[in-house]
Length: 341
Image (cartoon, rainbow, N blue to C red; front, side, top):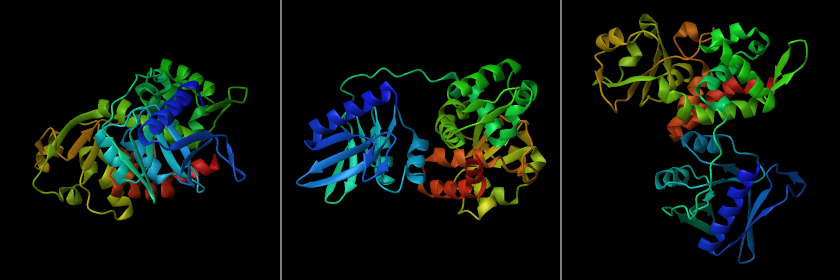
């Protein structure tokens, strides 16, 4: 854990103690023989104590909330999300998904009867300088990571082939691979041979950053329609497009009725819009985006985006039913990738 995260923990503990008047401590890695990589948080009150495994983030978004609900750190202790400042809307979402949190402003949610705490709306008492985002997790780097996560053997291909698969400039690949080596996501095995490492952590980082760094840049337009079931009869391949998000999940796993329709296409959407009577609307529930990959994968012939992207789009909504569906997609299509690594 770097010094920035340690400072967030200490400021959050101090703020919690001042606001709630409860004893709270960050203890070493071991408890009852179990190892916690980032230590363990202990809260004590009236001869009772509660333990949490800390998950420290400089900031949070809906995807991070979803990850906390879907993939708890371990089965021994409940996760405690610790971050800089939780906004009121995010506080409500954390409460709704029952994820405990504390922040450096004294906001908190903990529901461990008889201990119940919910504080929101406090503003930061001091500004913690945020570390700049590594370029590896900016748009160009995210495109390369996406290609590699979908095709791990691609890491040993010539840079030209990697660049084509990721849709980036040839010069991008070199610094991305070097950054991945530095962050221990790629192991140099000599003789121009590499191996991807820590795929679970790499996938998690990609999922967390994608909604803010890459996805907004791919949005073409939003639309609405009076026929909410239009996607059921539409042949998406006819328009050179692919289903993503909730519709893709519905087609793969008999999902509940989608509330949002996500489409990826590099073709002008005019024909799609006209034939399905879509109307342009800034807040419409039909979203059209530009693809950012150029490689073959199993679901392409079905007009469905890669499973990793389905998972990411579902998690980015922060919706409980979508998070549950994302868990199914993860187990069916992504878990094996992580286990094999």
